[in-house]
Image (cartoon, rainbow, N blue to C red; front, side, top):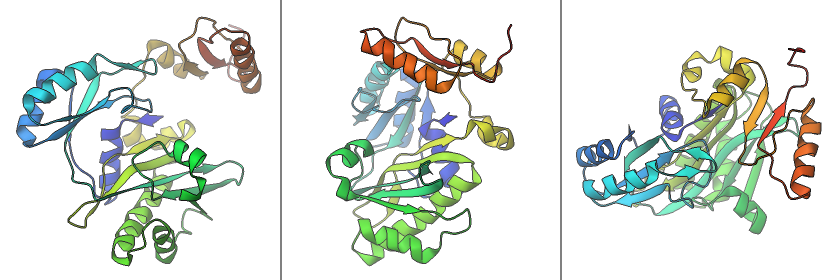
Length: 286
């Protein structure tokens, strides 16, 4: 289950991670009113369960309420990676001296959680890994209680040489690891974590994915669930593994590996899959 940025920020703040607070709007007029309330330059950000918001035009700087209205109207008309934008987050613009990346996710190969840290924040971490892998630092966690302050400092010093700044990053990292374990998450991410000219370390963005199999014991997080389509909601209720896509060839497949192979074959021969649907082990004949 994916959380929107504003929802993930709410969770992060509850664990003591410093964030830039904002408010959510569903119309352009609401966005303008929020910009007026916040004062100064604001950022209008699409709230959608898809990456690449900035490249798709879903993140805009607004110097005044009128600009916020115009940007919000344009963003709310967007469809990003097949998903319509229904909400925008309006936050005060922050001054940035330096950007970092921090994330915690599952390393399936190692069968352990792994911290990923980089001094190259503010861009897609996949691009950093592909083009400058030396900027990516990994630290495997041994368990939910096995990450110590000295280890957090060691990780932080790999991405920030100044000890006083690294100490602040380390404190955020420890809290991020706490969020990961306490929330049954499969991913928690701050991109970017920024150093301001005043010397503060703040999370400007927040991303969070919760393991679907553990949502039942996370009632507060379960309340954040927003299905992007009626099909996704129906599939979830039926216990099916379903991901809608943009294509025109529907796939109903018995087994996840076979489903992926079927989609690959469709792509290989010039088609576009309309969905991923694995019914293996979860369906009855009806």
